[in-house]
Structure formats: C-alpha cells, structure tokens
Image (cartoon, rainbow, N blue to C red; front, top):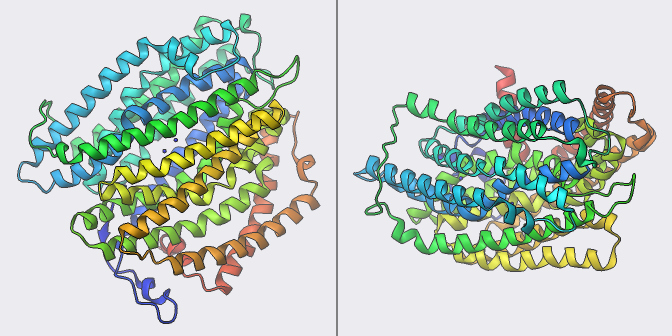
Length: 575
C-alpha cells in the first residue's frame, strides 16, 4: 500500500539543537509554503472524498456481499498499479525527470520517458482487464459463485482505472519536477465531483442500502452495477486528464516519441528491478490480508455481519486522513531537494532535510494517533455517518488497531524516498521481507487463535506492527548510508516529548468522552444527518480538549517544530 524542494535557511535548525550539538546545514526553503499549498489541495480533495465515500456507503453499505464485492474490485486497480507501475514510476521516474530537465536534450528525454511509461501501463491494463475473473478469485476466499460473478463484473469496469492512475502519476511528477506542486494535490477534486454526481444519481434512482448492506444478490441488477462502477472509473479519468490544463498553460508539451536511447534508464535498471520486487512482496502481504478479510466478512450468520473488506477499507480511509493531509505534503515538498542533494553528493543537506521532515511530521502524527485511538467511534460516526450504529461498531475497533501504526507510517514513507534518491532499491526490498513476514504472521496467528469476527481488527494490528518493523530497519539502513549519523538525538527527543504530551492529552480526552456518555452519546436511528452532527460535536469537544492540552505541553517542553508546522497557517490568518 502507498517526492521535492528549494534550498534555504531553516531559522529554527540551530535553535532547536541541544547544547553541544552542531547546527545542521540549512534545509529547504519554502517547506512551509509548499506544504501549505499541497495540504490545502489535499484537504479539499479529502473533504470531497469524504462526501463521495458517505454517498457510496449510503448506496451499498459498509458490510454485506455487494459492498465487499465492489470494495475488492475497486481496490484492484490501486493494488495492480502499485505492483506493476507505481513502485517503478516513483522510484525511477522522479530522479530521471529531475536529471532530464537539466540535460541538453531535456524535451526529448521527457517525451521518451512519458511515452514508454504510458504505453507500458496501457498494455498491462488491457491484459489485466481481460483477466478480471482470475484476478478477483486470487484476492478472495470463501465467496459464493454469485458474489464472485458480481465482483468480476465490477472488476471489468474498475480495472481500466489502472491506466489513468498511471497517467495521473506521470503528469503529476512532471509538474512536481517543475515545482508546480499544487495541481497534483488538487486534481482528485475532479474525481470527487464526478463521483458525487454519479453516486447521487444512483441514490435518487435506486435508493439507499439497508444498514448492514445488501446480501441478497437477486435484488442487484445490471443497471446498478454499471452506474456504480462506471462512476468510480470516470472519476479517475477526470482526475488524470485535468492535469493537462496546468501543463499546457505552463508551455509544456508532450510529444509522442518512442525510444529508450539516451534517457538514463540503463543506470536506473537495477533500481527498477529491486523496487518491483519490493512492491510485489509488499502487495503479496496485502493480498493475503484481503483474502483474510474476505473470509471474515463471509463468516457471519443470518442477520449477523462481521467486519470484512468494506469495513477495513472504511477504517483505512479514516486512518490515512492525517497521513495524506500533512505527512504526504511535507514529504512531497522535501523530496526533490533530497534527490538533488543526493545526486550532488551533499550528504549533510540530505541528513538535514530528513531530520526536519521526521521531526515536523512527528509533531502531528503522534497527536493524530492519540486522537484516533480515543475518538475512533465518534470520528467514524462523523466521517461515515451512513454506516449506522452496526457499521460504526464494526469499523471503530479496526481504526483503533490501525492507528498504532500512524507514527511509523509517516517516517517510513519519507525514509523510502531517501533510499530512492540514492537509487538504492535493494535496501528497500531487503527491509520489506521481514515487515511482510510480520504482517502475514500476525494474520495467520489471528486465524489460528481468534474467532473470525476479530480477524479484521487483528489485521489492523498486524499492519501497524509491520510499519514499526519497517521504520526501525530503514533507520539502520539510512544510518549506514548517511555516514553513521541521522540526527537521531533530536528526532528521538522530539518524539519522547510529543509522546508524553499525547498520552496526557489522550487521558484528558478519554475522560471527557466518558463523562458525556461515550458511545451512547452518538445518535443513531434518527437519520445520517443527526448521526453526523452527533459525531461532530463529540469529536470536536473531546478533540479540542486534547489539542489544547497537547499544544500547552509542547509549549512547556519548548518543541519548536510546532512553530514550523503552524507557522504558514498562522501567517496566512494574520494577513
């Protein structure tokens, strides 16, 4: 499952150093500005995505045969893109585009890079679409013939998204290399607009699903299938094609030009092979997780639903919100500068930008972990109100288990890009082996020792454990690569302070949550609007208490990275 900078001085770098520590070289200028632009785009797209998801759950539910079939089919293009294209594009394309823009034949190199990538992804998409039935069977277990047939039809409509995910990535990386960061983050808004319109038509024509979803497939017909799946795919088409507008306005032209000579892929060949191997191994773990969730969802009896693929996806959506809003924005604003510094042999700059990113991300992710752990139920009721009481009860425990992997998720994502900046795919692969073994081992242990209703919760915990193993191993690998130093003292000190502050704030938030009634304070059975409002006020009240305690303690602990995280927002508000 799934970057760029202008150099400058970091006024807090030396000030944040402890006594006797050498001041680090100035990291990237514009981190706050670029991160704010991208975070705003991501926030807008995520807000639209939440509306889209809420309407989707209203249409097919968060559990049941139809919801699980659509979830697997619509997840396939994401998984296949990660396996067959995403890893290699992100590991190979970004460094090669950075090099190409500085070459004497820049236009020729960019044209060839984009053309060969697009043609390859198109060919893979065509083959996999034809093999939809086999792909669906590979990712499921315990399904009836009728549910497999429905999942296959959904997949025929959804797998073509693979090509447009690839096109979105290709065009977005060109924009990032040209330091036009905003459009790449804002493009998913187009997807959300198309999806909201399509799912809105579905709800008007066919109505809403029961609270526990649709299990009688005799009630499901072809028009429902086409409208639902075609809407999902057209949204990805719009997301990709809208990036052509800022590229054309900036004067960039992509000429169809085949050829491999002179575009630097020979030097990147070993990186691509190792990256491909790492992504395949990682997605093998995801495949097993998907099969376990599919079997768990199919294990419920009459009138009883267990958490399955759809419930896991809803928990994952909420879990990834903090990561996508803040972590990805910071990492994207840093990666191009890290890549340039690595190519120029400036190890001090790479180390400084990595330290800055880890510390800034940590301030946010540690608090987000505490917030998601304490407020899993009200946050689910607010973000997915159409799931209802039963759906919320299925999703919230999975979200709690996943949340313990949020801190390492942010760190390991940034660390991976540093490996790729040095064109080191081998280390990424070797580290993926034990983390995937931990994920699969946790799932197997759950199947042996736990009842099926707990398998998906255990899957969230196994995923979190694999994240921690990954970040620890990547830390050791980068320490060796960067000359034995990673500014670890400051990074660990920052996380120790934030962990203490988050623990105290979490206790305060939990106390308020229990005081107002806990889960019983949420309004179910009176319509999704009241459910959402009850989730909102409970989350807001407890969350604001937690935030106030957390920020007060960070001020007392003199955590200067808080200023860097909030600085661009406060400056804009003042203006």
